[in-house]
Length: 338
Image 1 (cartoon, helix red, strand yellow):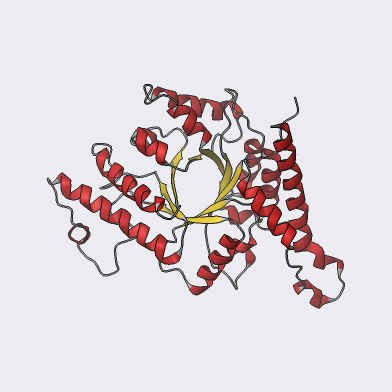
Image 2 (image 1 turned 90 degrees about the horizontal axis):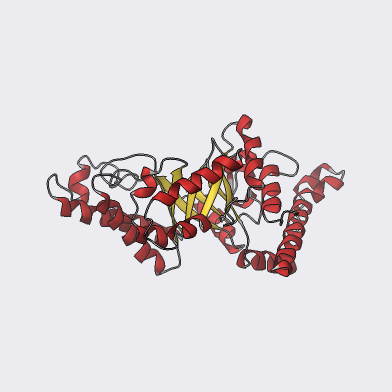
């Protein structure tokens, strides 16, 4: 284990400095035209990156907004992210990807990173109902007082998302659990269960990811999932913006989940291991809180999956770019000194 940790640290350090060199080497040139100088990654670098993604490590994640794709500012391109970012959720980008976005996504995936859709899905058909449809219930096929119609409509909604993932080669779906409606309904949890189960079945065919993100402390949005669905998730992402600077508060957030499904042996431990904690970069004043996540180690001895940020692209300005993200990748994967 010590050897593995050392290898991960060396690999991360190499990737960190090599990425920085590749993007800043042009600054050594005095010719104005040298600003466009680019050093292509070597085969060894690509090999190191592939080995890093395949090794046990804490992941770096981000909700990516304002996505333009290839040809625009690197701040709004997936390829502008540090190479060792594991995956992003494409915020409000359901379907109809532009050619520039598709090309950007393809290159992002080729280096080993992944990207999933993300949006609020509290109502059946949200962000998937075709333009011009005036009767949403009729289109998706659900009727009041006929619960089975809601179940079938929930499955149809899941299939629409799965079909879009297949069409654009998107790596999965991250359901944003913040609102209630015809799908996320605490009185009718079987609707969400049918939706998530259908997605899991479809995603398993191509190795896609199924993720849920939940505001920290909003445990009702955790409890609505059945143990089976919780176990099927690749990650649970916690919107821990308000508590990310306090390690004690992060511990308490995890410990508060123990009361749910106490008879499900090992479920709580599994949930912790697949959990990603996040800060927000939406406001500059909140960014320093991200440092609290970098060094967090749960006091109860079970390691979480990693860290991330809302609007990760807002960390782009800097020299090197993405300073908080790069630092986070390195620090969270460095074994703390005793």
